[in-house]
Image (cartoon, rainbow, N blue to C red; front, side, top):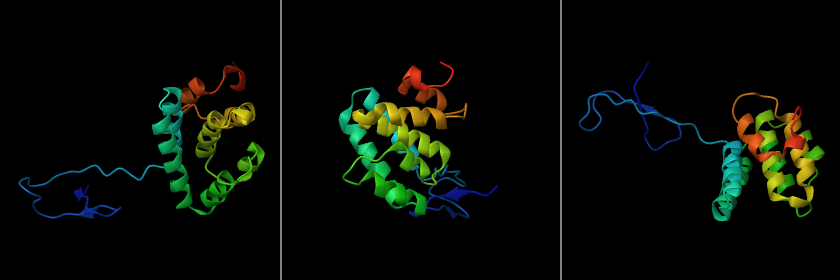
Length: 148
């Protein structure tokens, strides 16, 4: 496996020789966080009562989606529309299942009027038993989670 270092770009640049005083340095390059990651931060901050961090995370999630692929741009166009978007319309957008689930959970926390609808759809899409299933179980009401 090669040695990698960040060179001020999104992708790492392969390095040869020395970096500073060290002979070889292995740097971990984390991928850009997805919109789902920002929605998870929003959910956590909202649950902890930190409104400023929650709003910042929600804005970053929308910004990430604006710069994403065709499906993400279609979803963010629905989210920034002046009228409320129903969950069925958002589910019709071809997003990744996990991202769609987390997005609907976040929208349910954000939009109290449609909370039950968003959370019911999020619970239907939350089929993975890995992360963020257990975290979403703390956010979604028990009635929305099948089998509880």
